[in-house]
Length: 216
Image (cartoon, rainbow, N blue to C red; front, side, top):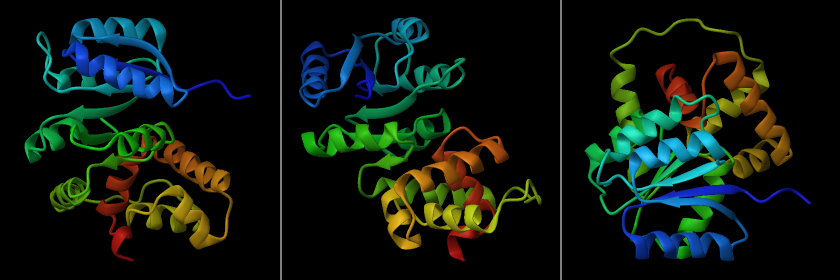
């Protein structure tokens, strides 16, 4: 049997933190830590190396964005899913630029939250409806400000998978579209990440948009 996904919760409100941890445990995730301060989160994450960190942006000692940036710079960075009361565009973009894999507002349902945790663990960028378009739009804006380069050569299949990922399809949808297994799609994405020296699917989507693959 595969080991349970190891999750750390970072939120300064004890009741909310406990409720999130309880939902995760009921869904058979292993909550390895639940902390209320940013610096403490960085210390604990470095020691226990969780797979996913559920991160609030409003922390008493250190902004959540700085925590996300610190986690992304660690030796074995976890996936970071921001769970915040704020749906402000600036907060979303700053979190993603700092290394967050996804962004969910706290008004999301329990089912939406647990699905977001699972997808984050699989390397998918997950956003509250309406926010994904904002992030992709920002990537397109940035793409017009920097020259493209030839970069490493991808196989035809890797390019095909990358194009569909950039259009917002999940791994399962890509697998169905190309008549491949879910695992094969994941392998193609991982190979592409390695070739391009990128760290996660969010950066991969940005790479594809910069080269116009999402419009092909």
